[in-house]
Length: 150
Image (tube, rainbow, N blue to C red; front, side, top):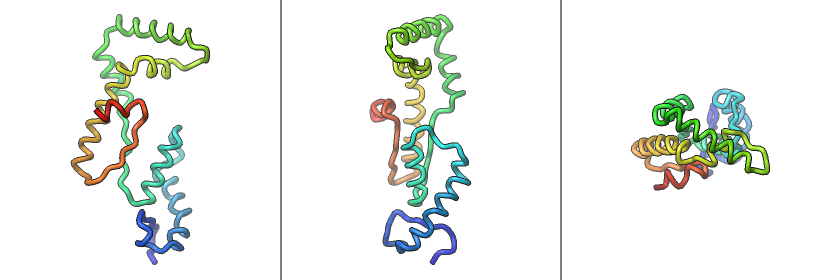
């Protein structure tokens, strides 16, 4: 019987009683030392994180830093273009029957401008990860799937 926490993806490595007994302490350790009360607003990300860590998988949670995205957008768009994009998004928001935040509207109506840098960043990160691992399971948002797939 192991002295520390152990949970494995393969049931034949550790007996089920030990796995069951260590499940709650392992979840508590992940919550305390890794997540630290900063759960994702997306339930699937939390589920994937806990399942992967309990299965002894390596986990890479990646996203383009917000400051880098803002710098890239600031360097690629002029003030006039930003003004036109703002007017376009506000006009589209006025046409909608339900309220939506300007951030959601911008990402929904102009993904080719505001999501393309993130897609390129994540594609590069995945390519780097492929060099270091033999098997990768990647979870990406639905709006990022087609650009990354290509």
